[in-house]
Image (cartoon, rainbow, N blue to C red; front, top):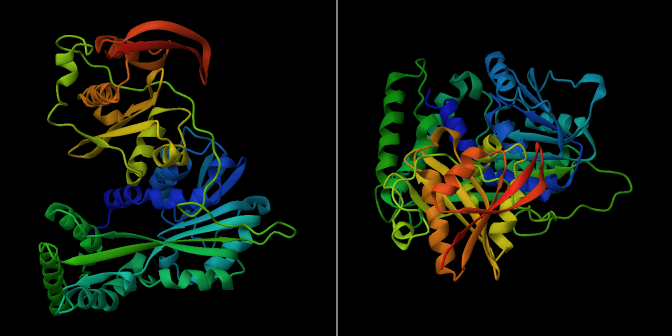
Amino acid sequence: MAWGKGQIAKQALRTAPEDYAAFEAVSLAGRDGVRVLDVGCFDGFNTYLKFAPYAGVARVVGVDPLPEAVAEAAARAAGDARFSFACSSFEDYEPEAGERFDLVYFSHVLQHLPDAQAALAKACRLLAPGGFVVVKTTDDAAKLSYPDHEQVMRRLFGLYERHVLPNTPHTACTDRYNGEKCYTLMRRAGLGNVTVRQFAADTCGKSREERRALFERCVYFRRNVPACVDGNVAEEIRALADAWGALFDQDDYYFVTQSFVAIGQKPQEGAPPWKYAGPAFGSAPEALPKMHDAQVEALPCDGPPLASAEASARPPAPAVAVRPLAEQDLGAVMAIEIASFRDPWTPLAFALDLRHNPCAHYTAAFTESGLAGYLGWWGAPEGAAIVRVAVDPARRKAGVGRALVEQAVRDARAGGHGVLTLEVRAGNAQARGFYARLGFQEVAVRPAYYEDPPDDAVVMTLPLE
């Protein structure tokens, strides 16, 4: 079947901002001692991506019925004692010693369970008073296709619903119209303060390649036709999938797909009503993070130092494309962030900077395989300062870090700043050498600046005038 681990991981990265918006709404970044139950954790990739960045998360339990997936999840999070995994269906799972959770999370799982109403009622039972259920799901009724005079999309969906879903083991109970039901199901389960938000992806203004990528994202699992399906039906499904794909080649074709994220809260006696506010689901106050160690690749620097005009004007290597970082990139950002730092920033820290900090400037570097790294710098009257740099560990020593720093130099100079400053761990000789080769000079030391592990900070500057 086309829906494999690779596709699931891509989906987790692509749609992570939707989950982070829900976590922002329940103030996950501003709470301590949070206990999380992730229902249907699969191999743990999504579990670790979504919850590892939050220092206030004290315990995460992932539940999945597939033994090999649970084993892989346990191995993935082996270095983080907060994470544990249980091989069990949600129907059979019972926490140890009557443990209760502060957040029960269903990411594209509720629609696959035999009884969604019973699952939500159980989730409510497993919550501590005041805890939250977060459901991420889909709804085929929300998909639009025009012009589609032959009703190609709806015919394909109908055949898939009748012949593929019931004959594929892990989709035998799947409800492809789960999104519209979440509000009612949550209310009937005893949850209060229920709210639902829709996140859309469409073909508007997209290139042909982007439209085709959206098509592949929506069709890959519908191409799965079990051997037990009648041959004529199987052939019709494949033909309709091809015909639907041809629509995406047309510049005037409009398609939209929506995912649903619903939040409900277990009532807490005597607690004031919980309200959503802000641009996403809600906003949680969090101070902007202080500057951290710049985690970059080390690579030889040919030619003159970056301080020269000729070097700073040189464009990035052809294999690396640099553009402004967007909030939609946060899933891939957080995957690199938690792989690079012991104390990763939360998604909300990045989001607040992108939304509200006029001094913040973030760029992202892309290669053919996706986001490869990112850099953030803040501009102030006294100069510009790099506050965060990270490169995907699998793509270091490939010019990504250099391309990001060079772009920051160009942008800071264009902004009228006379100097670019950064702080780096004294013990990070690799990063210090990297910056020195780019023309930065060590000008000061800040004793005991870093806490985990303890280390001094070396201040490095690059004149831009």
